[in-house]
Image (cartoon, rainbow, N blue to C red; front, side, top):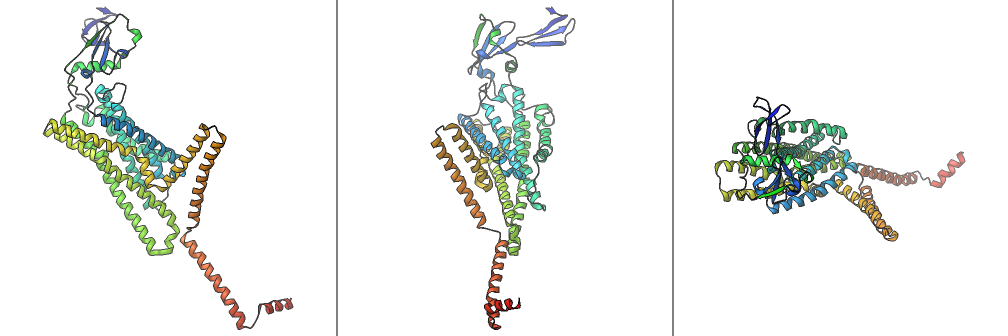
Length: 490
């Protein structure tokens, strides 16, 4: 069989390769399997053969290994994603629509919230997708892409906290403790010092260099036929192009595909590197920064107590700086508590696979792994609650924005003028009362230096008023005589 000076030199059920005449090297290989999307469902995976013009529907368990994730983990992931989307979304709105974005720490936390949303979305689509399977089991390409993106975003989250801690420490040690930068400079720091180095390290998952130069954790599917059926996903075919008289054959394959087996030493090595890059090294750096920040704050408070009224001039700015430091320290501590156990468990689990394979112990490790993943994902979802509980300025700004959104929703939804007026007036009355309380509290607590100066002026004025009658009595001069003398002199 020949066409356009090409001959069919190699053919099997999956591919037809064309070569030049009297040559054995293929010039073009046409893939014969197409994914029949309209005929596939959660139970059967159907392919259309372009030469035989038949549809073969195989048991999905033969093509895709069943997801090892439990229903508790999947539904918990969905719930955590919803909470994280709302919480991080509100955090971004609060940080961007208030004066908080003027400070560097809140600019960095805005970027951190955006990364949290991306991370939770990637965790969700691994098990909830159009294929109803684990995304990493669909094909090698999907496995590499998802592994790379989720590792890259996770590393960005942890190192963004490291960058925030370093910048906060530099601000405390420098003369300008409230130094602010523009968004362009903050994004430049994030891109140059965080994104590019992590991209160079994590890109080895995609481009097979470094740890994955010889082999890859996504490549070792035991059945070659399964690879071909998974490759058929790249070539979907519309149901309109399939003739109505096409025969459909259902094949119930009893022996499912074997689970993906990784090379133990490679998987263990990657988990160790990932643990160090995601948790251990950021923990060490943030711990050092937090210890120095705590010592700096205690030293400043000690000096404030020793010097007394002199240090009270900058008491408001120092208190604001201390609140920012406390917020950052708490976020870093929660990060280590909620993300560290999973990474340590992955390393132990990889070493355990190398030394001993026991089905009961492996099931226990998988279950423990799921609960620790839920704990880690919860950290990326609960940032809004952490900010509200710790940051007073963030909490007040969030309340103001929520009330504003509430009033606008009432204005758009409710059409009754009287009811709308009463609800909106109630909303504004609450805002006014809160603002009045904040103004009263701020005016009733002036700076110590101003209070001391006012008391000093008052005591000086009183002393002068007391001394004046004594002088008049000593000279036996009444106020009336003084006035008379002055008048006579004129």
